[in-house]
Image (cartoon, rainbow, N blue to C red; front, side, top):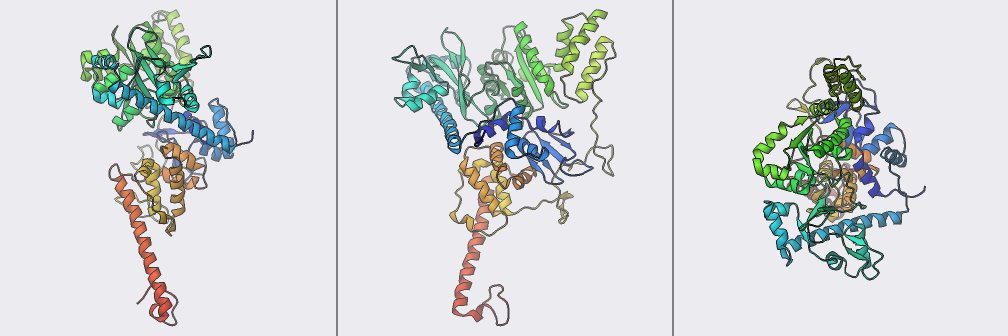
Length: 605
């Protein structure tokens, strides 16, 4: 089909794809810390310099400079153009590629932004009602009864949907049919065509409201808890163009704001579990949104932390939910990852449990939670009798199909070894054991890789080192590009001078292009910004920059940006003044500027 691919679709596609799923079938990788490394498929080498960074969803080769996201890898590895790469990537996750004319693309993107905007308005409306509405007291009393402070309610942007059929309809949309349609698309209104007089009414009425925010903090949906005895007790927004329940996790945005480098995430079942744990300074809890734990949920979390703890009730329903979660986790259990299962006493949930035993004891219980292997074999052993020959055979038959789902690695080997010990059978290993070995580089064969393995290398022509480490040089413009890409929010606090384009310094064209695209997408994060930049003529240069671990300060970054910018502009303006002065002197007395018989050289008086 002819036509453009909406940029919004490309952003969503990249958010659904794990770059490891794209690269691992094509390149043999091994885990090195948070990243993965292997031999570069784009040039001949004997020592691995090809790095895949799951946290950033990027790959980079420190040898040849190849780099990019999942789309860029497909373009380079499969030798296809951008459109074909998008189609292949979309097919891998089972979605169709929309193609429309440019006008439709702009309309679709604008519609998406308008939907996010009106959802934010509704969230602000609900928060205001919790503070000011005449019927707010029941909601306030409920939250206080659950032990929540005003600070936690603020952090999670809790609100109140007043009783009544048309509060949101009237306050947010009024008589504007376009805004009514946006509220309907966003799941805030319900349509009843049989009621010709009032065909639209509010979905959420007389409920505590929990805004659901995406990774960028944008409101994409809501959950509501009833204050009376009505059913259902909890009600979520339906699927919308901006809200997909099977992919989002409640509390993830808030957790990442509080924790710089979490080591584990706790998956619980409800909004109040997440909030109650945060009230007790346990900020690493997230909740699924009325759905079972999905592979998409786990992929999102495993990109951030090496360990996930599932927290369920200890009854049959809780153990069945845990078993379903285990099945989703098996294909993702790479070496270095951990999944544990915490089963609470009967009648307890994380909210009541943490209030009962305290935050310290609750946190300690997470570390003592049942490991995946123990839960797996205990569950299957309960379905047969492994003390008999028949039971051992049945256990082997039940376990093998599940263990085959594990990714290749040492953990898979150990799980099969455990099955052999439990059954007394010699069970054939499905794969050759994978042992992590350092690359064969003279001087450290068989040993751990050097501490600087995988770091940017100094160019061959510039072998300068500082403190024994390679020194990477880059221009002032590249420094600014680095800061903008890694901290796009800088542009909200910086005024770009009008005469910036007059500078005559290296890489200015690159900086101007980055600023242009970044300002056109003011709310983009690093990954979304890079996905847009990669399709530009500067894509390769940008991904090479992004792949290098340039120093990005955690403090003073705004001052550094301003300082670098002002320094280059000051030098440019001073040079321009000198040139103007020289031109005037030459016009009045050429000999005073350039001695006779000499070429035009530095300014002299």
